Amino acid sequence: MAIDLRAAFNQYFELLHADTDALREEVFRLRYQVYVVETGFERAEDFPDGLERDAYDSRSDHHLLRHRRTGLYAATARMILPSPDAPERPYPMEQHCSLYPDGGVADPQRRRRLGEVSRFAVSKTFKRRLGEAGTLAGVAEHVDLHFEEDERRILPHLSLGLLAVELRSMHNHGLTHCYAAMESALHRLISRFGLVFHQIGPAVDYHGQRIPCLGDVQEFLPNIKRVAPPVWDLMTDGGRYTCGTE
Image (tube, rainbow, N blue to C red; front, side, top):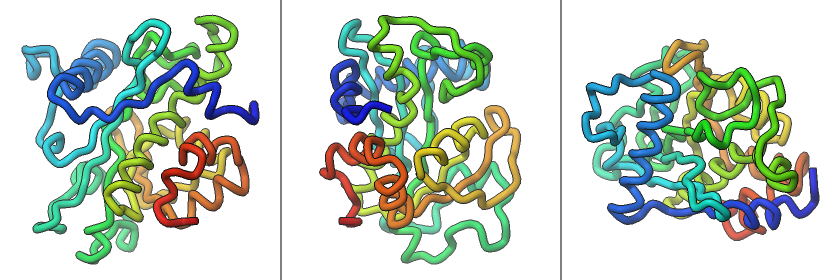
C-alpha cells in the first residue's frame, strides 16, 4: 500500500456530503442502479421514479464518492442517526437480524451515540473484480482490471473511502458506536486494516448474506493507526476526523 494513499485517493475521487436535494437525488438514483438494476435486491415496481428510498432516509446523513475524471458518482453510503427524542427507535439491523442477547445496544444513553452504516453501495462501473455482480461493496476474489493504471491501485480502496465518509458522520454527530450489516468479504477486508467490527449475531440473508456487527470508534481508530497508518490517514483526513480519539 502506498504511503500517500490519501493523496492518491483524493486525486481520483471526491468525497461529497449529500446535503442538498439535488445531491440526495443522486444518492437515491445510484442506489436504484445498484439495489434494483445491478443486484435485484429491491423491486423496480416499488420505485417507479427510479429513485430508491426508504423510511430511514429522513434520519440519515448521506454521502457520495465522485470520480473526478468522468464526473460519475461511483459509490454512496449513509449513516442512520439516532433519534434525540426517541433513542429507542430501532435501526434496520435490529429489525432484520437476530442479535445475540448481549450483542446490541439497549441502554438509552448509549443509543444516543449510536448510528448504523447503511445503504453501502458501489456502482458496477467501478467494481474491478470478477464474481461481484451480486455484491454491494465490490469486494471479491478474482481480478479483472479496468481504468488507467494509476486508478487501478485506488479502486480496491473505494470501500475505505465510503467508510471514511461514515467516520465523518460519526465525528460530526458525536457518535461513538455504529452498527453495520456487512458482507463477509468486506468484513474480512477491513479487518486486515485494523478496522475491527465485532460480530453480534448470526449471519442472515438480507440483501445477500450479511453479518451483523458493532464497531466502537474508540477501539477501531487507534487500531487502524497502529496496523495501517495510511488507511488511518485516509479515513481521518490526516487527523481531521478522529471522534475524540486523539
